[in-house]
Length: 68
Image (cartoon, rainbow, N blue to C red; front, side, top):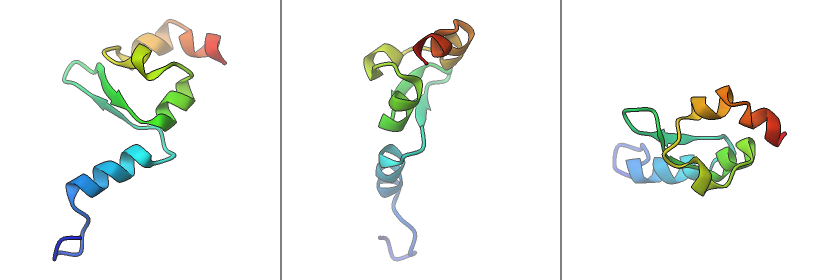
């Protein structure tokens, strides 16, 4: 931990990706760049099927309903 007592950005990133809370990284066009394991479990799609998709496509297509 840095002298400030706050975790470094790299530590925060690791914590977020290891979190049980669904998290995504999106580009300027809202397409998924990366997702954590909790997001994969939440939506039921493999990570490879999610990358470069806009999450709204999944909601509006009914894909989430189909997988549940």
